[in-house]
Length: 123
Image (cartoon, rainbow, N blue to C red):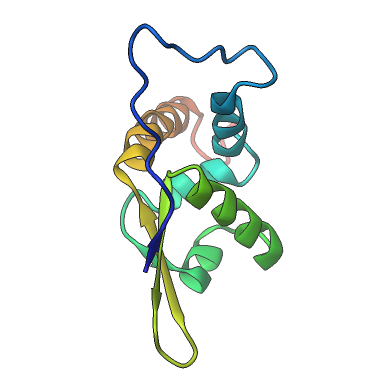
């Protein structure tokens, strides 16, 4: 079962007012740029992962924070969630098309940062 709704494409004439506190796009930006949202999106860029694989790939995240972050990203339509009807249920997460689009510049940003940092142990 896949959850999460893909946000409808906004028409050019009906742009979101992201600086207004009631703008729904502001919530999505907050989720993407949250402490753990960025790491979840980057981790899912390479392949779909089960909950514990995702937790293990992001050092320092608690199960509670991962669950909260995933819930928000699924609700925003950035991440999909698939539950296999097994005992116990197997839950897999992956990026939606919207999530791939949003995570691409994040990956580029991380690549730029790591290219520009001095080598470890230098300085």
